[in-house]
Length: 194
Image 1 (spheres, rainbow, N blue to C red):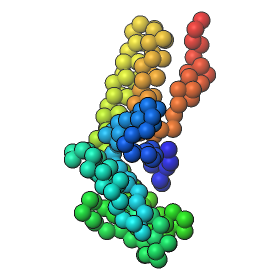
Image 2: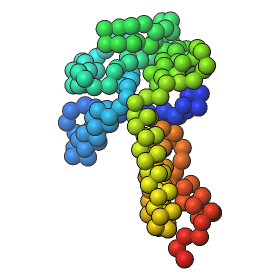
Image 3: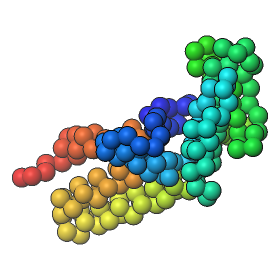
């Protein structure tokens, strides 16, 4: 998990999407494909010197057509003396960079912020993604329910469960607040369990 200008970004490295391997490796590959299906965006990292290899073409061919959008990241431009840059390619956006020298990393950073809905013009805010709005709506319903549970039934254990679920919904947006944080705040404010 990283933050770009305060916006949380969850990155999952799915290295090793080749076919075969033992049962444990096959399970890891299966889980990687499940994560890819749930992703908001796919970053396919390639070596700029070789271009898209047959193994990478096999990965691209397996991606669902209605799945998350793809950004091709062409790394190692320092080794073939290419310039950093961004262009629209046949698969979608392509970013040329060097992880070693840092050239083009700012382009990737700005691209990711744009994908998350960040708008640098105007008021400097960002547009909420549909799933963020859904998470906020779920959190509001859970908070309303928690309030009703506590005020009408004085049911602290039900209140705690609704608050936990609301925290999880908000955590989908921020990724910063843990169950331990929530419990710490509850126990600091209420006498629970007596």
